[in-house]
Each structure stands twice: as C-alpha cells, then as structure tokens.
Image (tube, rainbow, N blue to C red; front, side, top):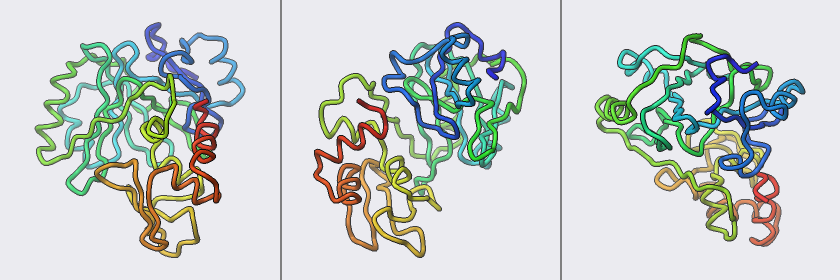
Length: 267
C-alpha cells in the first residue's frame, strides 16, 4: 500500500485505526513510529488499518490544503511533486523534502480565520495514501518523485501570496510527560474532543453543541484566536476541553482529564 516515493529509510509512519485519522499509540512523535518495511506496520495495514505519515522525519513536509482557491493561487509557484488527494473533500496534500532538519509546522488562515493551508512539519502527521475514511480513499494524485525545496523560500512564497493572512504556529509539544490540565489542553484541540463527543462542524469554527440537541448546527463556537477554548451561544456554557467533557458526562475535572487521556491514548 505504501507508495515507492515514501519508502525512504528516513521517513516514519504511525498506526491509525481502521476508518480513522487519530494515532492508535501515544508518543508516536518520538517512540512509536515505524519504518516503511516494519513488520508491525505492514501487519497493521494488511489487517485493514489506516496509517499516517509522520512529517518532519527526513525533512519531510506536507502542504495540506483546506481550500482549492488557495491551491490554485500558489500551485504555479510550486515544483511538481508526489501528491495525494484527501478522502472526503479531495483536497491536495503536496509532499516535499526541505533543506532544514525539524521543519516547523505552520498554519495559514484567511482574514476570517478560516484555514487555508497547513504546512505539516515536525511532530505532525497526515493520513497516508491508500487509507480509507467512510469507504472513501486517500488516493495518489501525482505519481512522481518527491521534490526538494527550500523551506525559507516556501514560507516566503506563501507570505507573498497571502499578505493579509494570519500565520499560526501549531502546537507541537511532544507527548512525553502529561502531568497537568494545561498539558492536556495544549495537545488535544476543542474540535477533536467535540467531534469525539458527537459534534459535527458546518463551518471551521462553528458546529452543533455536544451538550444538547441543536437545530441550526452552528451554536457551538471554537475560539478563533485560541482554539483551546469554546462557547455555546445556546446553552451559554463555555471553557476548555476539560470543562466540555465534565459538563457532558456530569463528572469532575479530574475525571474529565482521565477520560481525555484514555480516549486519546495519552496514558
């Protein structure tokens, strides 16, 4: 299943559950990642598990587009490279090898804070080609070698093409010692928890509230300037992911942290 372009001994891969996007193992950024020919990885794939490509290893970055307009705006500036289309929306994932180790992860939003592009670098991952979500496949789009580019030139090009964008540095804390509520909130986003609790998002920062039934489906709001926090305009509750889980199950904050750590395999 793993394309030949990704069979680089410097690249690393992670285990993802069948029909999912979330890593199965904790500390995948540092410990639980595998070479392409690992028996563990190959057995997992043969058993119809999904897999992720851990970016950053081997100076690999992936331009993960959330907007076709953004892709069309910059594609002419980018060298042809190995590319994948996402399963549901069929948005491009462009793979590049950059000229510096541990390339930083960046996110570029428009003026309304809608995500345009994720530059997936160190301590991030993208779902690998051949994986499935709801019977839809991550498919190879451009079956060509992975191009080599300058990381600084890439970021300069993006800034020049999106001069009014908001550039966010994604949180990339390594999951090595989760000892506090702040650690949990820095690793897992509100949107991840809300979706795990049954929410769906019609807009990047608005969805239905997991605490009650929602007719319009947009009352639940993730804070656009700091996505660790949320607020529901219907039930008028808000807080961080710990408050969300505690309210959902009517449990203490301590019990909510334990639920999050278990649910997202952070223990």
